[in-house]
Amino acid sequence: MGTIPAFYESDAAVSPWHIEAAGVAEHWKQSRGAGIVVAVIDTGIDPRHPDFSGRIVEMRTFEGGSVNDENGHGTHVAGIVAGARTGLAPEARLVSLKVGDSKGRVDTEAAKEALRYVREFNGQRDPADRIRYVNCSFGSPAIDLELWVVIKELVKSGVSIFVSAGNSGDGSADTWEPNFPGFFPEVICLGACQQDFQPAKFSSSYDGVDFMAFGVDVYSCWPGGGYKALSGTSMASPMALGMCLLLEAAFGRPMTDDERYAALMRYARPTSGNPLMVGHGVLDYRQSPRFATEITMTVGSSEFLVNGQQQQMEGVPQIIADRLYVPVRYVAEAFGATVRWDGEKGQARFYR
Image (cartoon, rainbow, N blue to C red; front, side, top):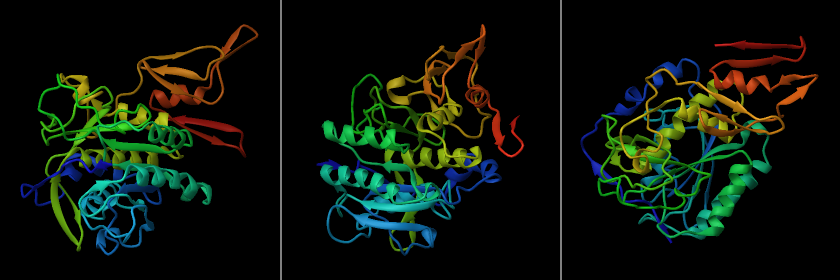
């Protein structure tokens, strides 16, 4: 049995301050996430909330009972991703997969079934209508190897899974507070920071945290058509997912999981904090993206390094007639260029 990590109600925020603080206004000039499908595996969503009007693709429960949110956590999380007023990607579509009860308890078997269902869902849809992102703002200190296998299979299929790091922190990065599935290397694990980009004291620290995002006094949707401010790493995970979704929408084609991670890396502000708590840094989308400064490719290998981070590419570098040929798209995109191929003209276009 897992749980929704403890979250904290607050009256400090009375508006979606995170929209401006996250710097999404510039990104909205290119896209607001229209059409991209996100699965929220949580306590359900309030389907009558006006912020989600016309954009809930499907609602399903894996814990029995109603598909509706009887806790509030899932509605709040979904609102951070795609709420019309509170979401970073307010035109994205949502699939609600309910695994948590009214008290926020998550059955691990239900969570595994929900993750398996994502693959089933995608197998029945055209590529444009498939789930590309999953948010899992829940966890447990107990490892479940079967859950790990399910996650690995889903990520391998092209779906990125964002998870919360957990709220068991004591304010010190010197202690070890592992949380699953956050500890699994295939997921993108988020710790929480305050509005000043400093780590939240409750944010868990362990080798598995990838980034930090806003998670204190976050204002989002609440069942009954209202709004509420909550704090927790549960809020940080959809915060990062929503922004990554915008980056993908502007990219011009579906990204791979590696490309999504690399896109987030470009907006990770290095901090002096312990990596066990802050990962690669705090996600700050107001700054200019940090593109690659070094790329390492090996002849015959589809794996390559961008600023020391391993990524995967289609095709491999080859030596032909004493000349080195590399898949140029991956080099160009790592350095911040956009690549477009015109099949009719037989032309490739590179631009920034």
